[in-house]
Length: 266
Length: 320
Image 1 (tube, chains in turn orange, yellow):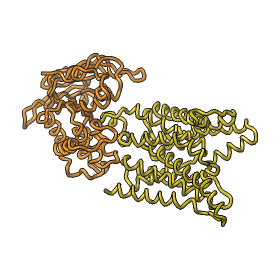
Image 2 (image 1 turned 90 degrees about the vertical axis):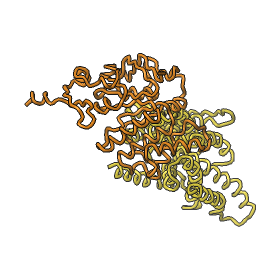
Image 3 (image 1 turned 120 degrees about the horizontal axis):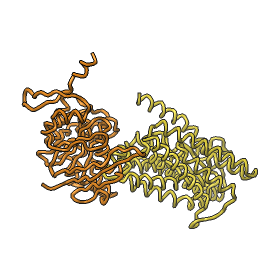
Image 4 (image 1 turned 135 degrees about the vertical axis):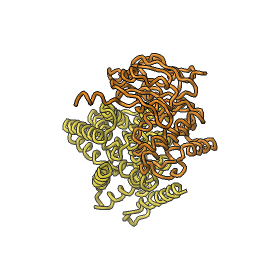
């Protein structure tokens, strides 16, 4: 397997506050990595560093053996796309115009919309099933629709690597499942490598291939998703007891926060 | 295409305004004098008004996009005050130099504008993002600060300079001639060219820095370039005809309602609309108490004040 992304000793400081310290990991081509960890662990920071939204203080991020710092922002945008935490509904744009803007990295100042661009747009809308509301305004969409549009826009960038920051956090269960399936579909059918920040342990354990656990800006654990759900590991990560059961339909292991602590309080 | 048609209509109206406004209020019989007034006074004045109005409207549009705020303009954020202070100091110190044939006053105003925008930008960044309230309050504070420095400069000046500064601060096109057009045109042209070149980037800046960066926009570089060219443009306009307020707020907003917020259409529309808008305001200022004139800045501010309040109330009720 070829290494797509190589993060080595990455540290990020903002105003003397350490957000990430010496985080290293590798991502293979076609991998689906979930980043887990408590609030403030530096998960979103890591994604933003990969997208060069936040500058790294030290360490090296390499993409296909090329340091990120050698790439222009435009070159980077042809390699990595990014879906930020939900705020698609706040944008005052026509859906189709918003998705079309994702082709920026393939254009110069006055170049025309090409057939390649049109193809990318149609594919992205098709995969995300957003064709029916291309003409609507972003701020009239429901949460689930807005999230699919955000993903469509990222797909339209046609990058081998897609970063998603808590793509299902504000969605109801039905739309959560829908977006999870969409992401899996992108990874398996369309061979896009995925890095997803999530708070959903069971989703991460079942659907992703690898998990990177962060705590207080440091790497806590990195390994195959099937090995995540062991008591000491989860307890150390979240400072919380868990109990385990199996999914009645799939038989997959499921972790639930333990209520023991509450019993003690009562 | 709908937007194209709207742009054509705006262009036609602009052409009509350019052609007819010089003839309004032309109350002399003698054809020789008429000819002289038209070619030596009215024509340069109308052309100057068009260039200045176009520049102010485009700069306002850029500020609104960069700060994601319909109330953000070079005037509300104190950039025009910075430019005014630069120009006032230039007058007070009795400087008189030219750079490449261009008057030093414009450069002094440019430096003032650049200092003001650096202030506003670093404070809004320090506050971690652009909360609209913080941004506008910063602008108000900076305007007050620079205004008091202008008053101080005025106080120190002799009576003639002081009167000159006062009249100029009202914003007027009464005395402009062809020379002023030549002084203004390079600054505004650079700014207009840069903005028309960067319309895609402006669209992406509206989505927020994170998304713009992830799409491939070098946000910081674009932002600094835009600060630079808008400061040049506002500086030159303020140095030559004084701070003419609120055009940069009203025109792009009206154009957005007409043609939508895609900057590839919005920029040319604002340019034409801004130019003709200032011509209309200047014509009103010329006619309303003829044969005397009121400074055009008084007219635009009289229109702009209520417009500002309307926008403020509208954005508040929408946000709630």
